[in-house]
Picture 1 (cartoon, rainbow, N blue to C red):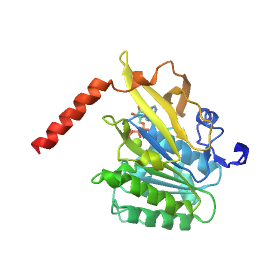
Picture 2: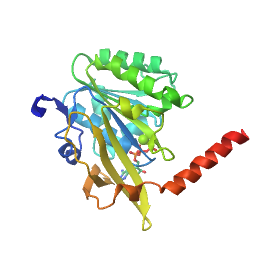
Picture 3: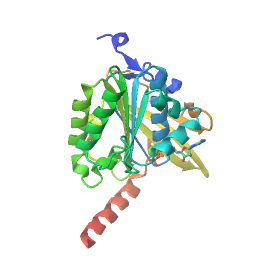
Picture 4: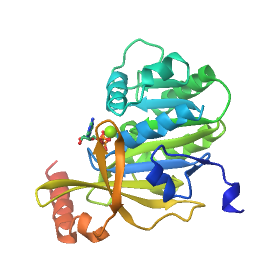
Length: 265
Ligand SMILES: Nc1ncnc2c1ncn2[C@@H]1O[C@H](COP(=O)(O)OP(=O)(O)OP(=O)(O)O)[C@@H](O)[C@H]1O
Ligand SMILES: [Mg+2]
């Protein structure tokens, strides 16, 4: 199929769109992985803000922050989520606070999550939709071996509802993979965020590690998070991938200490 025939959804970050042929192919399940504070949640906020502009039905599931924290964070980048909620363009499903409202998720299991998402989609109406699950790791904290099966089920069921999905997951430094085995194989795309300290300064990077049906850039890009704007691309990084990952001897030592911990338990 010619690439121009693929319907793509803008990520809300113009420079990111440029390196993935214009956007995320409709219906994709994209995994965003990276260290704490590397920019995953903010990238999700951009994705939803763009959805609101494009008249997509938008759903944001938040497990690590409350709905009000997400609304506040968005407002710092001049994005008005409250207005979108009032206009029935956005529903934020709060899985952290466990309150009594219609859009709070009381238990962190896959079935409740899928039911709640479908209920929200019905409430928003027919049409193209965007879904953020921030973070998906929260649903298999006590059973990481289920991660691949869970993400597969999620993708299969939600595809029918016209969703394009962003799912964040924490990054396991020891294995250099997303937390939970095999999610990266199920995902149609992987946006890898990195955060390192170099010369006493915090640096952040993004790399498109995978995007099916897309001739994406193979480079690492340095990014910044700017008040009032959000994620801004600084440019192609001169760093090599090895420079921003842990040296193999350090990884080996962490793994060995984990094994010792298991023996003690
Ligand atoms: N208004 C702002 N102006 C500038 N930088 C900000 C602003 N708000 C947040 N940040 C930066 O963004 C970081 C948080 O980014 P984000 O929430 O996207 O991280 P994350 O990858 O989702 O982390 P986690 O895995 O812990 O959820 C903060 O640590 C801060 O450095
Ligand atoms: Mg986050």
